[in-house]
Image (cartoon, rainbow, N blue to C red; front, side, top):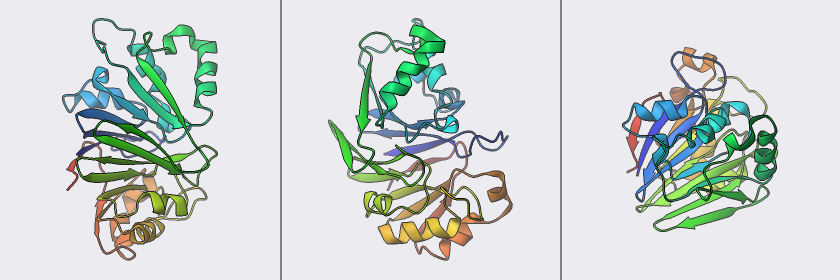
Length: 252
């Protein structure tokens, strides 16, 4: 299992950090965790293509996490470059189908993937859920952010990666991340903002979940002015990684 950080930032424009997007290569599949603006273009920097995406897991419908969704769906109509024959899956919380229908009002059929190539899975927004593929299980649990927000747990190749999306302190995400090899956890600001975590809170959640490694991400600009990893290490004894765009990490 390999993680590629495509965007470790937020919706605030930054030369250093793109909007939230993470690519995971596992069980012979390419999985996207969120699809912030520029995510599909960022794939090209790693020898990957939008036509290779097998699964898109969307944590919630804030613009910074789905900014590339319309562009991606539009690009699937480019017959010279989009050559999939096997459908891709789109996983999201309850209400996504209605959201997708509303996108058709301004964009029409251009936000429909070619017929038969997109499977939408609406996951339980109030409790745990899962989707099972050959060699890969994706579990979800509610995050403490907005209605319908989810975190995801990927289990494949004997490894476990968990991604929080946006969240405040969350018991359900602690349970989802239990004993994970890597916990990708938001750490939006060094000071408290409701609906998000501070570095110390992220460290405490990682410690409660007994994960091996913690990756801090989803940084607003003030996080680049302090050592957020050091603040998290005061609460978590394991390895703490500060996400940077372009970072590639083997899940050990």
